[in-house]
Image (tube, rainbow, N blue to C red; front, top):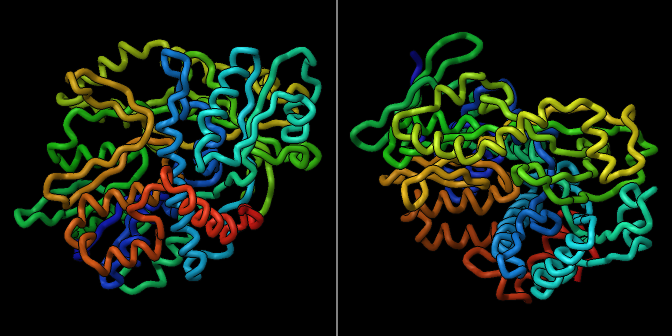
Length: 497
């Protein structure tokens, strides 16, 4: 058995681990870091381009980020938080582009306007109220609203073609929305890391076991998928950023903070159109409203995608049920994750979410024509033969205990860290990669508090994220200055004022 020692071991080579690796290397170039990945390639699971929607989640178009309160008012808390988080990611990416650590922005991010679209008088009124609540604040001041079919036809021509003239419709638009190729972004971050001293990328390595020494270090045993050999790495800090595979790894660790956590896996599928004559007529990410009973990640949207310089249209996602935690995982992933400490929460969540389970199974049973029928609610002129099915990545939603000890299903992301600050793990899904930068800064604050308190780390963090520690929601001038820089640097809107 070969063995080595590092300061930081990153498990998984997706958006989260690569972001944390780059942050740490920027903050302390002397750190010895290793990254291990189960597959042969970097960012080939949920982070890969076609395994996610590629939306730079900023709450501009995602209606599920603004729920309606019982009194009819709009709850904007989540929208402002997610928007601020994405601004942090944009600042970090801009810094890396300016430093030459990332390539020209078009290689991983492109301008695609973010739009919302609703049908029916009640939904039109909801969107009107949503727009009023958001656009009154600097973060969403440029959001436009219209219920005029002629204007909407300019914003989203395919969606308005052949639509009934008497149908109430409305839309909103933010012109500087982003389409992000998170797979390309992660691979470019790894390219940067591999150029640094004291960094090693180990592909085709699966974590077989882990144990913590009395001094707090972790011993992680790996299996080489090509040779079958066993390798051992001793690390001072261990990060589990393996997407859906993070839950089983967290359970292997045995830390008390993992007790009670379970996972609810959801699969996804897209309809994809590559026909130029259709693709060229739509240049936006247009989000609608989720069907009753559907999980939040199943909000239907018709998206322009720019992947490796080529444009395509994507519609979905069509959710489904599976017991796999990873796209290239095992059907035994979910059954093997059941423990005595999470059995009750998982059973309670299962009992309370039978409608969701039935919905996911019904989605799996749909025919191609059924899926295109769903698309035709968005794009009335869609034809079956113009679209083909593509399989997205797996999402594992969090099951945990609530305040009263009962099980609850959560949609979002959550950092779990050990009391001794020597291990952290990331569970959950959307908004995921869009908020990788603030999420990994949270890991730094939790697990590297002494270093984060130093003048050197504070100064460097403010170089990478100039608004670090400041509230963009309450400081419109700071927001506009930051946004002007990032939108120009990343070629999202050079005319922003």
